[in-house]
Image 1 (tube, rainbow, N blue to C red):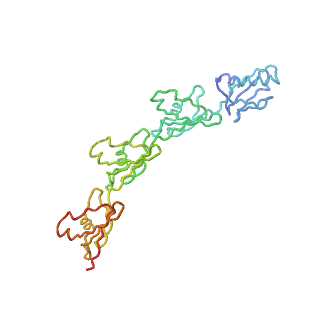
Image 2 (cartoon, helix red, strand yellow):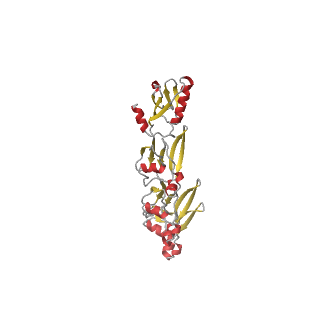
Image 3 (cartoon, rainbow, N blue to C red):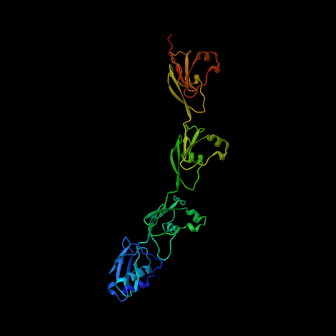
Length: 356
């Protein structure tokens, strides 16, 4: 009887449907031996005297009272006045995880519904990295997991209150990290992948600055941006001098998620071999031109055994190889600089040995 008083004081939700782990108290008028306290099993059943196992999950209290009355009056009692009270509700919790300030499990209030925005508020709100446009709610319905995606900006900014869905016990709210990634590779001081807030846009030059700027060897006129669009790749070549020299910000493109910026090394290479004092490969700034005699000087000049009249320049041209023989003595003796040819990238200068 002490329980009856407690139960009477406890508000009972007429629309509430019984769930596993609920604890219920059942009394039958003038049948004290049938008074039963039972916990709903994981399968949704209780064990009741005379009747054995009874399926109760999903029934309201009134529906269960009616069901028990019918079953008892069928075989055992002439009239059965059945009362059912909930003594202990099953754990009514939701989980809020991911990019919220206090992720964890939270109890659902009994007295009023709780919306997704209120649930996120209970968890302290979004972190600065939270992707507020792609919040997911995982829910188990009839044994099947259902996933709903909610753009909370539609609720908070757009005023679409119908999207502020009501939480149900067992729901899992997941807030993903809201950033996108761009990569800056090659001749910058801090190459790597950079994470950016989902709602922030970043331009090409801002990304270069984020990576510490160009190195001294960078070819700023041929920077490549690789986009992934509709499953395919698109490559854009940007001359950053066009942007910086003209001040035309429209040429400073906005990057897409997963874009890759590649800054090539800004030099070309020529080789000087044979009878020079420092034979080898030489790197030259991309925008600089160099003549044959300048290349010989860079290699510290001819040795005493050099055949200066038959210096050979080997060049790859139109897919084939070309050899140009130059008498450097003609250039130096005549002072005719027009005969001192300009070298191409990857040219090989070879100075043969003199046999006389």
